[in-house]
Length: 321
Image (cartoon, rainbow, N blue to C red; front, side, top):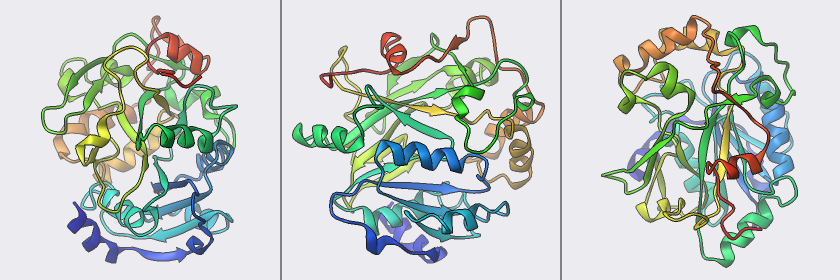
């Protein structure tokens, strides 16, 4: 993985480098984007409020003003590339180089533009307090479960404006269909379920998307993500979900994929095929999304906040009080 990361660094061109402003102890966020102007204003506000000090972005050929917008942000460093997202391990080789170069010794948050990290008491106890607490316990990684949010009615029919809280446009989630097993290779808790499992993979649940992630890590230059942030090496970093109730504090990644832009993005991805590790695997998934589906069902749960997720055992407070 590290060899790939070092080799792929040549595909990146710096657009705006403010990394000289990074101070010891700063919390860094890493993100690879393409045409995300709809989400970026709220995304940046959310993570600034949470306590991120500096953002390191890779822009992969945006043509909607994303690169220009990020260049103008005072706490953003930006690299650009037009090379293949798929052949760069879906951007992880590019982000891996930035983590190798700038993340060593820092707490590093790696998220997609449609993921909003929350955790118990996140409104009052920000990331610096959380990572300080983890440091005291010599815990160098932090796990989170993806919660797929969706609207009631066809996904493209719900208005959303940049800067709005996407959770207000996507207030529902599936709460009672999650399952887990230990991954035979990476020795992590492999979790599946949620709305994508119910709607798109009900006939082949083994193909359903993975929901467990390890997005927050005190980084070392010898570390590397394998598949998004679902798996990370060395495998000991997967010790983030407790086997017993309240054994670990965990978070959630509110997944806002199903904004009204998702149908157009899916049509584009059917042509680009940059998100398909196996082209046949997700073709039907994106074809269904392009048809503007209604994901709601009578068992849908309306999102109310972090305490609700703890009560549903989709997140844990551990000993974090």
